[in-house]
Amino acid sequence: MNSPVLTIISFLIIFSVVVISHEFGHFLIARLNGIKVNEFSVGMGPALYRKKGKNTEYVIRLLPFGGACIFEGMTGMETSGDDEEDDVDSEDEKDEKTEDKTVTFKPGDFNAAPVWGRIATVLAGPVFNLILAYLIGLFIVWFCGADLPVVAKVSEGMPAAEAGFQAGDEIISIDGHRTLLWREIMIRSVLSTGKEMHIVYERNGEKLETTLIPVWSGTDGRYYIGFAGGSEVIKCNNLKVFKYSAIEVRYWLDATMQSLKYMITGHAKPDDLAGPVGIANVIDDTIEDTKEYGTFTVILNIVNIALLLTVNLGVMNLLPLPALDGGRLIFLFFEAVSGRRVPPEKEGFVHMVGIVLLMILMVFVLYNDITRFFR
Image 1 (cartoon, one colour):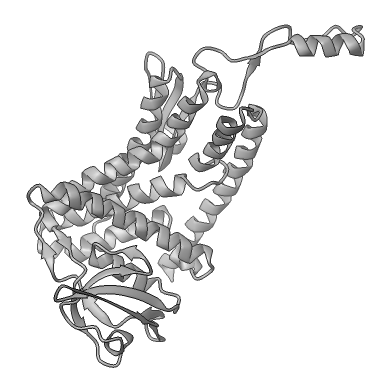
Image 2 (cartoon, helix red, strand yellow; image 1 turned 120 degrees about the vertical axis):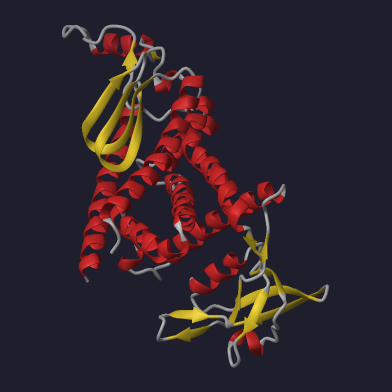
């Protein structure tokens, strides 16, 4: 085990940067659309620090998991006209008054903004996570370069050898996915479910195609293709850094989507899920495994974890589930297409149910993290 202080500091810095970038995206685009932000908070639970700004209260909370931008009137609405009806009014009179009553929202209210302004505000959080990922990618790629999808070694008796692969072959695509980094090949090998793979590759300028079926390893509990690579690295401490930083973000997006697909199709196990405790343990292991190579190597690996987490946060928030940004976008896109607004109180109820389910999932993941640590 490493120094817990160093691990905790690294954990807090990573989570703070990732969460603040996400919430700042919401905050900035909300203000540009005239939406009042009542609270900008980092963390969950009881408040440790509060500072009242001109229009927004800034809060740091006890538990460093997540954050929030609370908009004015996010789930509520006000109506013009009297709130109480005269008990002696007839039903017809009540109906006439209801028809005359116009639904309005206060200035600065989230629901008062145009629908595309609200869509932009909700979408801004995940987009800012990807912007942060690109900026982090510039730093990593500048110093580390990019691993090209070139085969370095083929294992005898494995599917790759039987399919005719040789050292020096460049993998062009797997199952239609254009491969630009060796890690894109590896993620498909690690998360393979044993299905046939169609691979396009290039040898001496000639484009070739083949198919193979990964072989199962009972020892490692995964499928293997049977070739190794990643040793051919292109230097990017020049203008190439801008291109390969985008490719780096593309890789992490692809890895996240492949992992989600793997999990949704029922191939993942509970131990494959990791929450804050699991992430802290990964950070601790990373520091322990890389410290012998020097402080700068440790920093590079910690920054790489931040890149992974910011991409994951962006993608996970876009899932079409209640309480997440993706769930809110479903309601907003429905309004944009149909021209009809879902009543805010009904939408709020759906998101409240989603929050409860999300909290249950968080408790399960936290319990799993802690029990796995002792196992």
